[in-house]
Length: 136
Image (cartoon, rainbow, N blue to C red):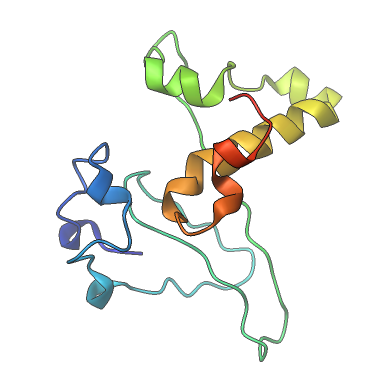
């Protein structure tokens, strides 16, 4: 992660510079690892610059991470236009999760997430929507 106090764009997350790891002055010298034992929960503010990495080939037990976001009830804190554009649906209800999310919907959510996070990987042309036959 890049600690909040080292990110001059932390409170300006809509500024394109916040999402540009190739910009001049990106604070690589301030990045900090977050070592954690298997099963540990790590959480942070969504503006915090963070990323994952692969396990070391010397790891005793290779592991994977999962990510998720929690949302305040829209009756207490309504969606912004930007949020609705990103998610295009209400959060899953407990009943939907218990019934199982249909494959088509899971696939759409994965594709939207890839496109949403593509700002961090501008060199990867697979995220260029002009190369894909998809609607977002």
